[in-house]
Length: 138
Image 1 (cartoon, rainbow, N blue to C red):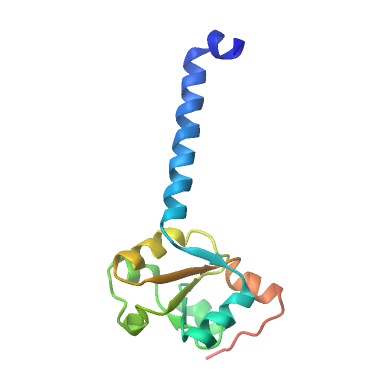
Image 2 (image 1 turned 90 degrees about the vertical axis):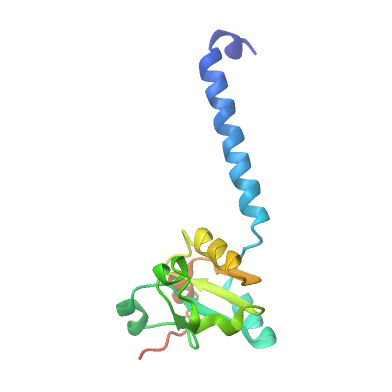
């Protein structure tokens, strides 16, 4: 408490940052987008006939991707050019990039476009390879 009274501006700034972090965390949790591991991908694809959406570059996709993956660019989702996966609106859609990071906003965009079951592959293709799982090449 002594710090708070001796440094009111710094204390208020700290509280504002804490509240902003908490609000962001709650909003992300309420978005309904779950981060899943490699083992869960097979379950969703096999039992619920889902799809993997690979969001890496065309070159990275051609050099190796998860079997059955559909390639889209992040700009395709942003511009609502998702015709390749339109039939999966009520089935699991697993978003994949190289490292599994920075996919939450794209997942939210898909939710806004009517996709009901959106997931993010934890650690992306890099984690897939770390677990010695196979990529196919075109």
